[in-house]
Length: 124
Image (cartoon, rainbow, N blue to C red; front, side):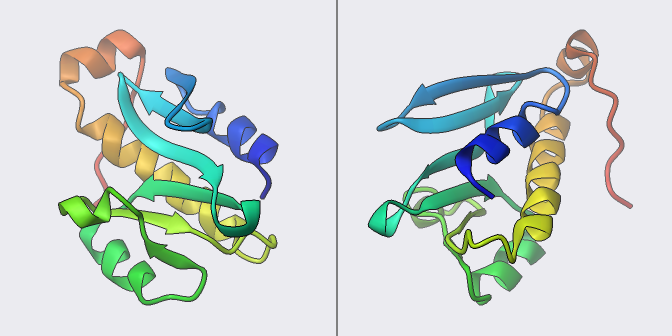
């Protein structure tokens, strides 16, 4: 996935906003809360950062192509950065971005979810 594909995918979720900040990073938010970041990693390759569940954080932290997200993970937050962007992990990235959106949107108040037109259900 390249940065344009990342932006297009993140923009497909309801009630998202996009800003460029933190050193030219593509930052995606829902209800003012960050759920995904597209940036440049080592050797200027794209790197995509997203929030995860506790279980996915443990799994991905030990999986090739992913690292605990710089800055976020060192502060105890469950964020992962996908560093493998050859396309092999694109389907997984779409899943994890969707989950990140869901996790962050569910963290908004019910009133805020309703005002934004977000209708999500927690995972069972």
